[in-house]
Amino acid sequence: MQHDTASNQLPPTRDDRDASTSRLDAHTHAMTTRRNLLRWTIRVSYGAFALAFAIPALALRTLTQQTREVAAGDVLVYAAGEREGTPLNVEQIPAGSAVQAFPQDKTEDSNNLIEIVRLSEDASSVVAYSAICTHLGCSVLPNLGEDGLIFCPCHASAFDPADNAAVRGGPAGRPLPSLPIEVGTDGAIVARGGFSGEVGPD
Ligand code: FES
Image 1: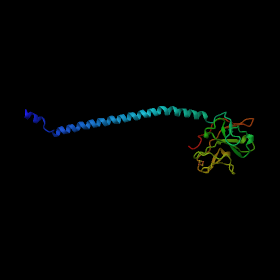
Image 2: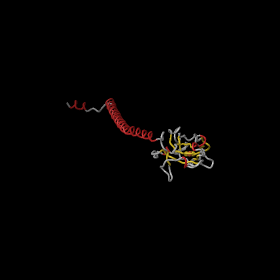
Image 3: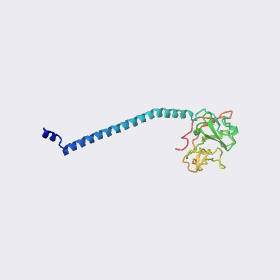
Image 4: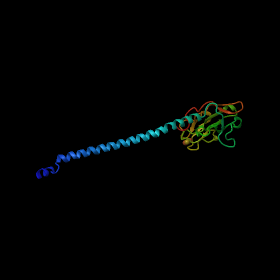
């Protein structure tokens, strides 16, 4: 009996040790895989949670912006000064000068800022452009330069109001978008639509 007991306590062979190491490796691999799977599950859950809030918020923001852009029928009002918020009247704009305006009740969006220029004594010579520079998005000056051009103070781009706001100098790559307008019999200036192109830089 003593002999049997001694044989049961023989030290493990090399094969026994290899088998044990393989089992340990397999166990470790399975644990790592499970941990990675858990991590990814948590990340995907967080992502889905965030998207569930982000998508409706984005949709609402887009909808709000769409409904607040200048549009046909908007009465234009002074953007600043003692007449701020009151409707423009073409008779109050001297020939060869400019004023800045917003569509009434849409003043919270700076992209709605409009440069109104009266080119001559003729009341029908009033033109309107976006007042947001197409270079990097600064506001152009409310007054025309001595050369009759619309000027951006940030990097000195200049636009010709008598020629569809064509670029006459500076780094801007395209004209200011134009805004179709009409002058009512009472002298009020009203938008006939939205801007002709994208406002601000591309
Ligand atoms: S933002 Fe107007 S010239 Fe640069």
